[in-house]
Amino acid sequence: MDDQGDHPFCYLTTIGRVSGRPHTIEIWFALQDRTLYLLSGGTDRSDWVRNLIRHPEVTVRLGRRDAPQLPGRARPVDPGSDEDELARRLVTGKYQPTYSGDLSSWRDSSLPVAVDLSPPTG
Image 1 (tube, rainbow, N blue to C red):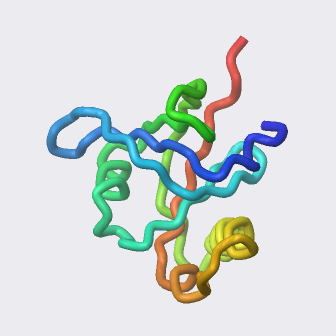
Image 2: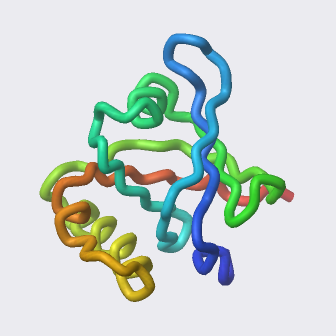
């Protein structure tokens, strides 16, 4: 994925759990190998999290709305797992240096979500 993780945000598109229509949000992320990590401040009450729990197949665009779509499968990260700590550390570590406030409360209370990106085709 080269330097794709350097982008300041990504666009995550989920399928609406009720409407069945695509919904896109702009969100902070961190990339580790082919897994993209996100933190939901609204935990599992956020619409985008509820959507991906119902329909885990998502697409991601890194940095720009018109960037190529990357297909993936989203999942909440198991609480208390090594991956849980990794997701929190990666996302807050990426943004804390340039953010004017303290992200530690958000880091600790958010729900980590992983998007396992599909391997490239071709």
